[in-house]
Length: 225
Image 1 (cartoon, one colour):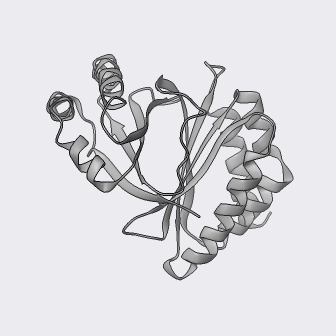
Image 2: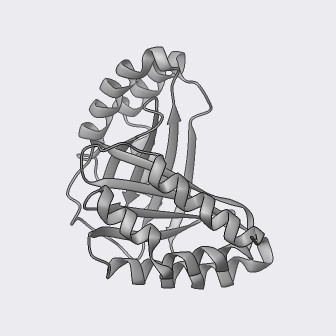
């Protein structure tokens, strides 16, 4: 078996094994890092994959974003009606073909994170062509998982009311429930910066710090257009 097909097979195996039946919808966050000279080719590939995925049965959202400062880094943000819909997508020939092509451009393997909703808004909400996208990985020590859940829910509810917020979602990993992803869209960089200085955000960061298991990994992105 070739290296490409072996990696694809491992991806499919992980997709089928990684999560037990859980609440719908299923949110998938996929981190992609490609060789710097391949960033334009990768953007075109990801855009085509994003557009094709939007037409699939059971897909609720498909977006591709590119790191604002490191253009070789991308994130795919998808949501699915349920696990069955995602499994059909993962097994499709078009998905395998996409993964094979990506294999030739990557610096590191695509990192798929599967999540259930924790504090989310309307899935049919804004999908702006411009704006500031923010994807943050939050990792807390396992004994403080429930404390973090409460903190994150409060953060989501408050942040969706902030000026300039277009989306604020917090999702929880299915296989590591002490790991979370925060997905934000802001109308402008000014709105994002103002949010970061808000009292409820500063209080959240102060209370999160003693329970953190890793650096609060906040990254800014732009939509791939």
